[in-house]
Image 1 (cartoon, rainbow, N blue to C red):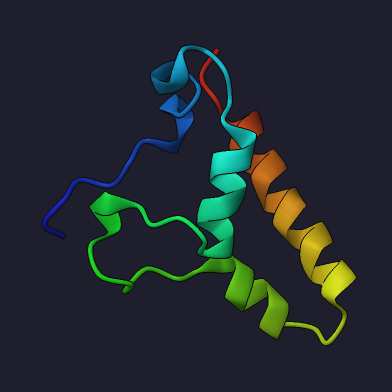
Image 2: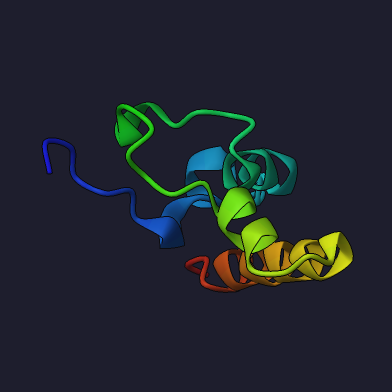
Length: 76
């Protein structure tokens, strides 16, 4: 890797102590690029989760579960 991976436990700290839920959800869906990822080599989780099931509601539940997991891992 050319760029050191982001420390996912520090997202809130780097955002003034508030977890940027909307932005992280856009990144997971592939609607917002992350410069450190470089070209689209990193998985777009929204696409992965949508392809796991024909049920779009279940895909959304999984995406929000991933979002909650990332939020819960934030350093206190």
